[in-house]
Length: 182
Image 1 (tube, one colour):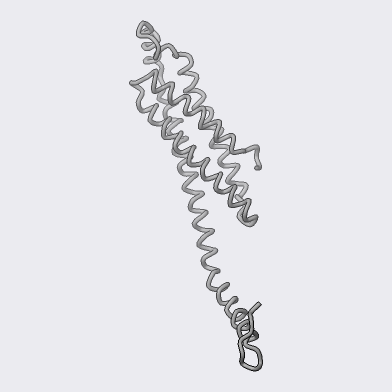
Image 2 (spheres, helix red, strand yellow; image 1 turned 90 degrees about the horizontal axis):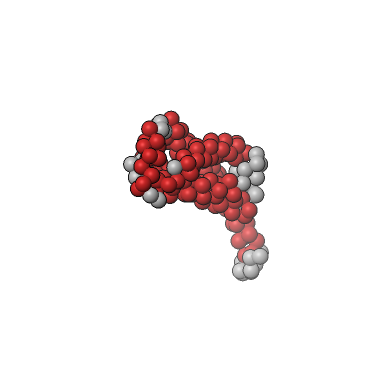
C-alpha cells in the first residue's frame, strides 16, 4: 500500500490501545471516562481493520475496485495521531504501574490524581471522533460507487437484450427449427 501504510499499522495500534485500556482499567477505576474512550477507540480501530481487510479482498478479485490513495493518506495521518495519544496514556500507566498492585502506594494515586489529563483526554476523544468520521466518509464513498454502478445497470441490460435476442433468432435457424445456442 502507498504512503507507508499497512494493515499491520492498524493491528499494532489495536494492540497498544488494548494494552493501555487494560492498564487504565486495572490501575485507575476513577478514570472511567478514559477507559471508556480507550475501549471505544479499540472498537473503532477493529472496524477500520475489518473494512480494510474486506477492501483488500475485493480489490484482489476486482482490479477496478482500487482504494483511492487519499484514503490511505488520510487514515495514515489519523492513525499516527491516535498512536501518539495512546502512547502518552500508556506512558502514564507505566509510570504509575504500582497503582493496581498495592494499596500501600497511595502516594502514587495522589500524584496521578493531581496530574491534569484533561488535554490528553480531549485529544483521545478527538481521535475517536476523527476515526468515526473517516469510516463514515469511506462508507458514503462506497455507497456513491454502488449508486453509480446501479445507474449504469439498465443500460447494460438493454445493451445485452439485443445480443441475446439475436442469438436466439440465429439459433432458430432459417427453417424454423430450434438449434443450440452457443
